[in-house]
Length: 470
Ligand code: DUC
Ligand code: ZN
Ligand code: ZN
Image (cartoon, rainbow, N blue to C red; front, side, top):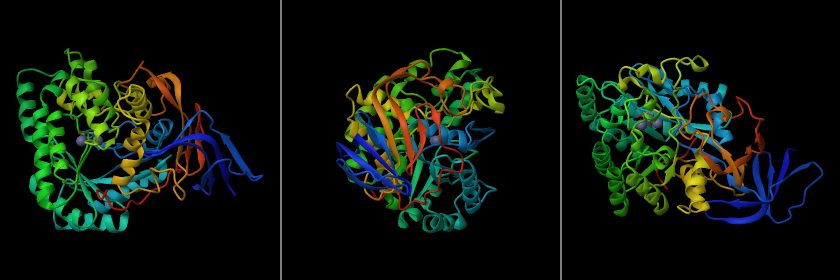
């Protein structure tokens, strides 16, 4: 039998911090204790001096996702390999219902990609762009039969994926009754579109105008509207990639009143601010994501909110597009918008850098505790999106998804040494303290230092329970 003991590691979960051994059998944790006996066939891994963390759960990735004319440069294989090296053992990606792709077919297509390529375990949200009676029935069936309990809807990108308030309300009302949750991209798309057209008409084509045409107040307005729709629908709501104080204040206010409102932020909002948008240089296309980077003051507010549980998750919104056209054969990447900022594909990579950057910028600096880091990057996403306690925990019966993390090891982040397809990282050249040493997926060692021991097809689809009930 496949049996392993991880010996003498410092086990850190969302609530614990102690030194012990973990016995793994058939991919699950079966015992935790001191000086656990090892049978002859047991592989013993010495974890002394290392943190043993539950594998990261990243509930916001875009692998092989197409937006408009552009497709993200990471496949399921490259993106999940990159995730593994960053200490993430479960991702929740997206299936895409479009005008011509009904929801069940969208799920089937996504499942196929995952089956062929995934190197870590995975689930899906469904992006919903059309709401009618059939779509509502399909959403209910997805929750009941497919293990998909969350649905992303866009309040931005009119003419493409944006849906109106009535559609959002209808979806919330339906999925809320069946243990599901709507995840909102909250920006006022119609006003943004007007600002974009005005900017272009004035000849403003550089990437910095992406940020200037998506002001924080429009994220605040949409967030407030989304909360009111959820209250009326009596359903939970989740805000993806929250970046602005104007949005945060509405989330805080609603949560204080006991309304089931949840929100994530992303590492790029925690480490970069809008002072980068200081020139007309096209190189700033690397900072084109939606929402855009906000003020330094907003960044401080996000860190505080992570500590006080006003924000519940750090997800990556890993949505990589290359800076160089043609890199690894990928086309219509960032340079697609060289003459028109509105055509620059929106998104940045981040799936590999989440744990190390949050450890370095959050724990080492004293902004959050180690346990809170684990909660934000593993336990809370697992609980909120129906994966707990199979994922997000170090507990008897949980999947043995484990990360051995050296909290004292320094390394310099570089795209060159990362394991995905993207040709840049916003963190290029940044020295951080804390490094993933080994990663176990259901008891299988898939990362060992710089060695890749995993492979495509090793990741399993994980049907999820209810979302938003936590
Ligand atoms: N929103 C996302 O969540 N990801 C990529 C693009 C976007 O606008
Ligand atoms: Zn979005
Ligand atoms: Zn996204």
